[in-house]
Image (cartoon, rainbow, N blue to C red):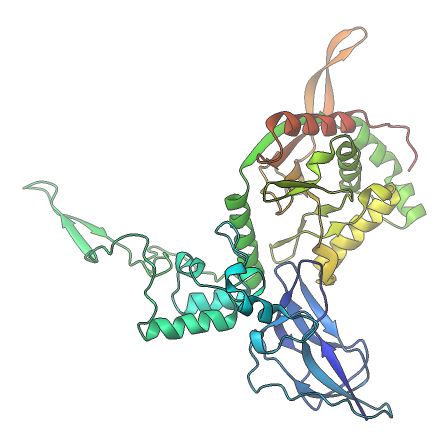
Length: 454
């Protein structure tokens, strides 16, 4: 018999850990190669981890909701191969993040030896879903969470860090950070006399808890707890607003030629290529052409250094059946023709909606496109997908009477019109570049060749 170790897979260049959502197998269960063993989640995407061999599950080294570093052994499988068993040191009964790092991922040792070199972002660190859950359960506010020293990768607060903080706080060792001197607790009900002869007016003051939320909601309400993905989206959006000074420019485009061309070819396109062509690949095609003219739009910021990306990887915001949003990435979009873009758009959208995206499918995007028009919106002011510096939103296409210039003079015609908006990071992109780039996209769409081949 041989023992095979199942490790936490690498899920992208910037992903160093993942949270175990659910085990599909338990010790003693038989498993086949490529059969799902567990579900995991990162701050980008949920994914399934398959078995790498046929055999019997002998040991699970982590529990559900544990945060596990990439490369760590998470389970062991007894196979039927006639090879000597591999001796593996026993894992601790309740493994912690800092005690299960293998030699291939020596994260914690480095941080412990050099605590002064911890990486701290500008007041907006990433927190794993498990850490946020513990903070919520223990009544730790976000401001208080920001002051906890993290020993994880890049200064992140780990499960052990926050539990140690909670324990120390309960013993009175750690003083709770206060943004302002404590104020006397107001009375639950304050009676304010309006006049000598008029009745009193009673003002109800809601009770405020440690994290700033209120208990006294009043009226007929329904309370919905955020799911894990919605919490991550919220954190990502708040962090983006704290990180980048957002500016949004708007433009209008006459896309009549593009609409008519798609109407003419869509049936033949589907019959010939086996794919339905939407407007999204046409928008991406125009976006890519303009990025080549203005490459600074395709960049990110590292301190005071602008990193211009040579690869054009377009993120495509996709709505999920749950109402949440995910952004799969079309890599090297500039290397694909229209058929290739169409296949990528359709495949990624289908995989996202069916929860089949691979862990690296949302990694390394350099710019993002969001189609707010698919939900009927005329325009939007999208939030930048960090660490990118720009995001393009396209609105709904509507028929409107428009004044157009002809060789015989101005005339009014019914045209297909669409608004575009570009949000950009004003640290890198000034209004001149942002507006010029957006106008170039509008011009590219307006000059669409109605006789082109696909």
